[in-house]
Length: 171
Image 1 (cartoon, rainbow, N blue to C red):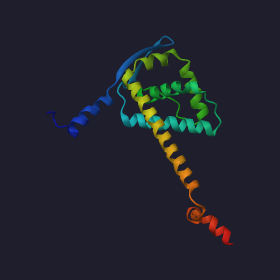
Image 2: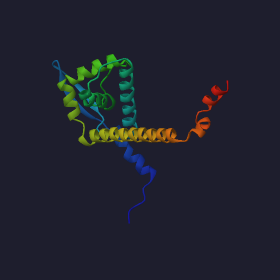
Image 3: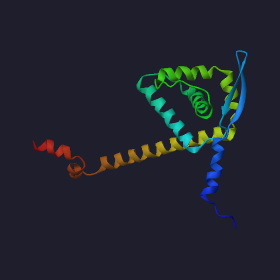
Image 4: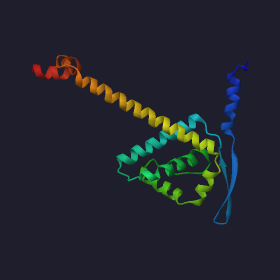
């Protein structure tokens, strides 16, 4: 028989999310130390995914052309942003952020940093992305189903479904 889990053990386990490893890198002949958080907190991953969604929505609204094949680079950029101590732009403007993402895409240093993060942590991010995509697809399917059901209802219920139409017909 297994032991009973307690919140104090969960709290103890959560301390791993504060652990860092140091990655020495050479930039233009000078050595820098990058602190990397190798274990990704579920809350921090969720916040990161929300920020990615916000960036993509803002980019769409402002007609910033983002190539589909850049998605993995965008995710990598945000992983480095959220799980290292590197300073990034504080701008919320999608043009500025995308420009910075392109700089990251073109950097071997970013590649080194991403390869320094445990594969399990990166996989966890993608699992969460797929979960969110599945949830959105389920919601869209439900909305489509309900819309079809509403459209198939007999016309005598129209005044219940569309009360504004009834008021307009009386005038």
